[in-house]
Image (tube, rainbow, N blue to C red):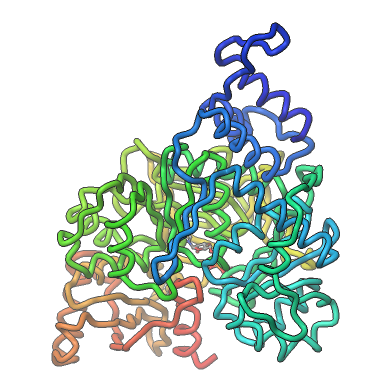
Length: 579
Ligand SMILES: Nc1ncnc2c1ncn2[C@@H]1O[C@H](COP(=O)(O)OP(=O)(O)OP(=O)(O)O)[C@@H](O)[C@H]1O
């Protein structure tokens, strides 16, 4: 543990009951709340960031001590359920032991050194969490990716990151083999499988033999921790580099106050391991001592999700809005969620209609949060704060979030502009280091004192943020600026609409007009399209300002989405504009 942080945590632990080991009494019993509040104080900028920090050592091993002292409920730290019902459960102690073994695999068998980069592309298998922690212990920089990556995607990522090692499973191995000669930096291929494959080392076999003795690398807080490729919703994915502390200490508040976790909770986020939300979950949950629940979930299936929520004592759930949109199509009253008490949604705009349907059927509030791969949680409806349906909530400390113009000047409340996060005079520690190998892009995201997120919104008189869309998604029709989210939310209120994407489309008179691509609910799929178009247009005119109604409507069987499940409006827009 960094010396400074170790001191702070130990003081917190000792002050709990006044025991003093040197007087021959019992060792001080750890007090989880005090440990977490110390980390939270750092997260919120009330205490300085320590010079040295390593999440595996400073946080996970502390929870292991707390657990050993009997000061954590008996729920596991990690609970995995396979597609066919197999289960894996680890305590913090077991996680520590297994991840030390995995660290020896990375350091010894793979010969990886601190600072070396390693791509990790696995479906939701327990090894993903083990190797993520092992990379922290060794100082190896992890680069997660999703299993659906094509050969082209893999080549782009391996070449751009110059990764020395890739860890994956049987399904992706052939794709790696097809492009590995084009990736000169790639030296080691590690397979997570029960069978062997020529040219690959076998992780499971190596893990069985590895020693559980490993001394965690003493990393500086600013050392590189991970590189995340963005979703590519708007263009080629960017490489976002995070430090040991930015994510390691930046998610304590997110975990405590947005997804509302304590050490007795069991938290399920249905996200894929390759998306940054998996990291958000790892750091939010484990910094708060909560259990991470994982279902293998080979594909996102509403019934499997609902059955899982009914079968296991999951207390907290987080999904992207797309998943909740799917869930509310089901008859939720047929399920009984015994333990579920808190639900959250992020990564995409949450339509008010979906939130209301969820609440009506489950009795549970859905708290929306907003952030990016580059940041931690920027805005959110934190637990216990009043919700304004359709708003992303307020700025989350330590961020100072403002609506700014293109030069970084703060705009008055109610005016639409860029969502900006203040980075001067002090850049929050819980922020990405930079876009790797792209100083121009890094510099271009800052205007005046603010980092410009690329998203548009307005802030109301009470400090709540209302998302309009990404910069490029906002439609400018006859000088009226129209956010796609508002139109999509209006459409979502109509029973015919399963989901929709709203984009600009060329128009000889207005320059551009609103076009809605709509996936119909099964009951409406055989309706007369012309009559339905008119009905939906009238509906939008009724529920929102009439000028926002979609002048063009197309019924489609599905919408283009990123591998993380987000709607790619840019693809539809480019199609409209012939780009
Ligand atoms: N609650 C939310 N409401 C609306 N949009 C959200 C919300 N949360 C996240 N987003 C969107 O997701 C973006 C962050 O996602 P991510 O970091 O995965 O990269 P991306 O923007 O999807 O990919 P790329 O930068 O490659 O286009 C935000 O900038 C915002 O546009």
